[in-house]
Image (tube, rainbow, N blue to C red):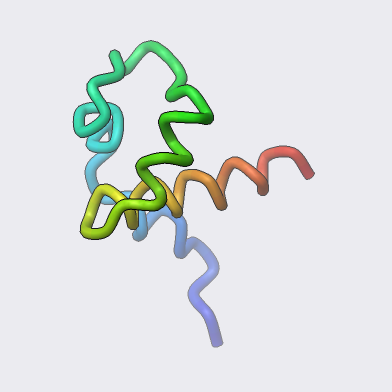
Length: 60
């Protein structure tokens, strides 16, 4: 059985993606910048892909 609140566990360091992409924490990350970061490898790419996927959940 999957854990119910897996998203809370997946986001360990709030604001880390903003810091890595040089976007102030009080601003939204532009979609183009997020998409470009999602194509990268490593931790930043993984965080950006998660952010993209989670943004799609908000629309439903």
